[in-house]
Image (cartoon, rainbow, N blue to C red; front, side):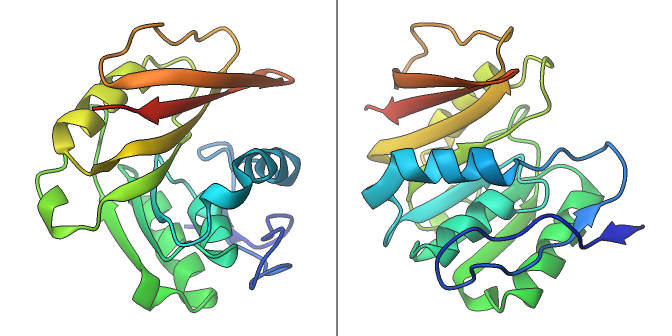
Length: 191
């Protein structure tokens, strides 16, 4: 597996400027620094002391950025073996092993059976491959997993052509922002 350590950096917080590994090629599409900065500016005070769930985590950049900005713990989930290895490498290079857990898992097809062993998440990042109809099944399985705190914030990156259903059970869309061909949807988990 070929790793690349150029371009992908932590933007702010304790780890500001720290370079992260990514996987060469087009298999994983890390969130750009500009988009990450915009997302975290919108979230502002919701990050400190939060428990983060980074789904379709890829390189782990969103969860690591949250930890750098004061999140207390992060759970990284991706179904791709190379992504899980990359996340592990990034967590080690940032010295975050004691504040993280990683699982190779497909949330779009399964519920998290060991959710009761993990801290309840108050902030979720979801950046699935675009236009593969993964968002709605992932949200349904996430809700069935019972890993979210009531009122948890969910941030979903998706293609502008991929619309979210208006009435997804247990979730309410609170905001949507367009960044080029990417739409970022902000949801609240309400049970």
